[in-house]
Structures are given as structure tokens and as C-alpha cells.
Length: 389
View 1 (cartoon, rainbow, N blue to C red):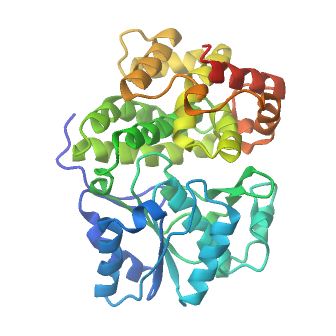
View 2 (cartoon, rainbow, N blue to C red):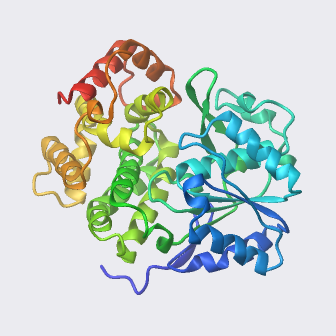
């Protein structure tokens, strides 16, 4: 099926302006939300690039007093967030532009939350009804502009932030953290290196897959997840092989948003392990999910076979069995240059017991189709370290 053009305005789950070149509407988006002095929050790798310089200048040309904050880590921590809050207040800003990959978007959303709070960041961890502690009137408006196709944080109501004192990743949540406006412009992703394109694209696949396999009832999210898997199958290899292919980049940035929309149904063991590993080893989140994926799928096999086989048929695999689907995952990882084991990225099994325990305590574990024990998570982790599938 061909489409007339890959562009549109969508309102699910938030207001999304999708299409090539739509970054030109950034200042208008800020003005629509009443911003006169937005703070653009991004990561240091992007801060000096032409796309960020142009975005800031566009806002200034429109009469907006736009500032820039980029002092965040690849796995943003609480100190990064509070430094951003200080920059926001020092510049008398009145809104946030969340610009970048998952780290930039998550940090920016947390900054927007915290600028109007008098409690510590960790008081809003996604546990119980902590979110009700938030002073909603103090949350700054957010325009989100993703530059990678992976996390989908632009359509999410939470941020993953590292508690550096405890070496634990925590999910900070509030409904008002959902950006009010999103610009999905594939041209912003065309400069991504192939390795980052592959890792972030596999992160999008992990979101769609874990949402699909989550045992909770949410047919709308499940339907989105299945189509998200198909888009990754069709377009991720193209985007990695030809980074300038704007159509493939568009479909992947949509697959990323779909994954994060779908995972309101739940995540699972890939993320339950990736979060502690990211906190302990400061490794790339998407790459961790990409490596862990087949090991977690195999561990869940007894309860996910039917829906995996259904998905395999939908995405057009010649072998639509569970083994056929697993083979496709392994083949695509190899094609994209994803390592087969955690050992290949410098992670050993010396902390297997700790990792297993941390995985059971991670909120994502609640969405896994099997409630693994700490020992079982340790075994999955060890297998992934050794490459023993």
C-alpha cells in the first residue's frame, strides 16, 4: 500500500506534527503553548550541531528568548535534572523544548516537571500514588522533538532517571509530563550513525514486542504494537544501510512513537534487565535491549508462542513458528551489527546475583508474561553475557 505523502497531524496520544521539514514549525508550536522564553534541553553531543543551532535561532528570530541547556549524561541522573531546573530559573524561562534522543527527552521532561515543585525529584518515582504529590500548576509546557527513532519518549508520561547515590534507574511519572506538542521530523534523524540507528531501532522493536507480550488487557495498544513490529522489520535495515532515506527514517520514527504508545500495556524482562545494567555499567539502553531480546523471548516462550506466531504471520515471515520469529530477530541483529552477547560490550557476570535482584524490583518486571524470580533473571543475564542462547 502506497501513501500520497508521509505527513500529517495526529492527536494520539498527544498532538503530533509528522512529516519531513516540520521542524520549521518549532517556534509556532512554542507560541501556541504560550511560551515567550523556552529552554531547549538536549544532550552535549547535539548541542553544537547545526540542527540545534538552527532550532534556537528559529525561535529567537520569532521573538522568543530561547535558551540552551545540555549538561546531561547519556543516562541522565538527578543532578543533571536539577542543574537544568537551575538553568530554567536563572533564564526566567516559561517552557521547555525537549530535543534529542531518549536521554535529552527524558531529562527535559523531568526538568519541566521539577521547575514548579518543592519536593525532591525522587518523591515522584512511579510507585503507588506518588504522582499525586505533584503541584500540577508548576509543570512547564513541553514541545518534544525526537532526533532518534528508539525510545518514543515524546509520547510518554514518564522519564527514566538514574539515582546516582543508589546506582538505580528510577521512573519519574506524572500525566502532565506528556508533551503537549510533538514534531516528528525524519530529516533530523538522517545524520545518525548506522550503529546508533541500529541500536535505537532495536529499542523501538523491544518496546513493541514487550507491549505485545505483556499479559495485561489493552487491545488497542496490542494492535499498535503488532504494526510497530512490522514497520521495524521493513524499514530498520533500510535506514541503517541508507541513512539518508527519508521515507525509511519517517517510518522508523513513527515505529518508535508507536512502541512507546503501546507500552502503556506494559514492558517486561528486557527492560527489567536493561535498566539495572544501564545504571551499573552506563551502557546504551537501546543496545542493551537489542542484545537481551532473544534471551528474554526464549525465557518467555511457553506463554507467548501464540501471539509471537500470530505476529510472525502478520509481518510476512516465511517460517511463522516461534523458532522462525526468533531466527528473524537473530538474523536482523547480525545484519545490523548488533553484538550477540553482553560480554562483547564489556559486561561480565560477576554481579549476576545483584542484577537478578534489581530486575525483580524494576517496575518493568510487572509486565513480563512470566513473573521471574531473582535467580531466573540472573540466569537469563548470565546466558546473555555468555551468548548462550
